[in-house]
Image (cartoon, rainbow, N blue to C red; front, side, top):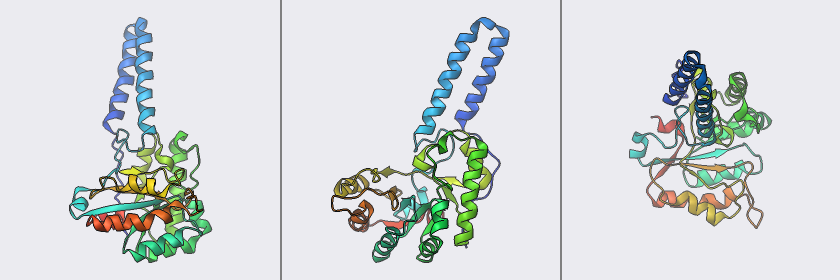
Length: 271
């Protein structure tokens, strides 16, 4: 049975409480002394710049809880997570699954709802082989991070419904497209019972077709608790025309085994 993160009432992150306090203070200051309005406006602009910066940094936790590493208990067990984004892809994902099976590794696939709807049997195969499928939005639109609460709710909720209908397992984790977001995302995540997950490191494998360079980045100082990011769809091609994930995975999984680490799904890391 799938582990479902319990739905919580939204608890704003400290930065958001501070932002609210700043807005209230600025309003009171301007009402009490109208001449200070330039200072109040400057403070609010600086505050919004900080909020925007936080949304542009995928691993930032200023806007709410965000997994950049596995929990301490999972790290103590020698576990790492291999996460694979943007699929499923009928040309690449089956080969990825075969490589994972050959090395006895489990992975978390952050799937796009529309892609899953096109290839439902491939999604079911991912789950049948012991991997997990999580929410990567319904459409993976370029303007994802520019949406408000309704837009985020529509994207995430539709993807939840799509992926649950296909696999029978509601996603527990969410990863924002490109990792970009804004302060309106966290309350939607909490409403849907989803945990935001980013990564410890990525090698920009959608643009970098140099398999050795990608491998070096992902294995440099590899530690228990790491969350690694690769892509089965939108993967860059090597000079030989091979999707870089297929060129990298065998050596990556060998390096994981040599370091006496174990690839598990994000869900398994909750245990």
